[in-house]
Length: 142
Image (cartoon, rainbow, N blue to C red; front, top):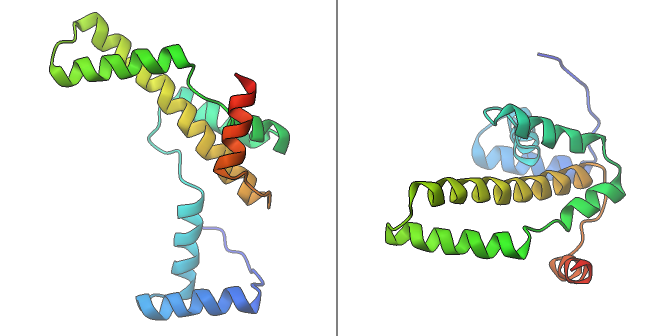
């Protein structure tokens, strides 16, 4: 396992040290947990999904901000909601169930891309837009 030496500002170290004492864990473990939590692993995802999400790492901040504004097209969202409702009622045909699964995967991908873009922006020290800013931006694009 690679090792690094890292200078941490006093205020951050003090906070992490308090957390480590409370958890009765070494500071190093608390820091590793924080890193793992803030940059979720892509392990276990389908290869195509991994490629699409790792591609975001090469995007500049402007492109990542555009990803934050992505939405599921309204017609697809309406169809998915209808199929989900019909699925709860147990009245989906096999073809409708395949369509539901496909639409759900597409909606999940939009959310994963947005989440990954947000993580990457934060790691680059960028400010994330507020929910209100995202709504205005999304409404303005429709």
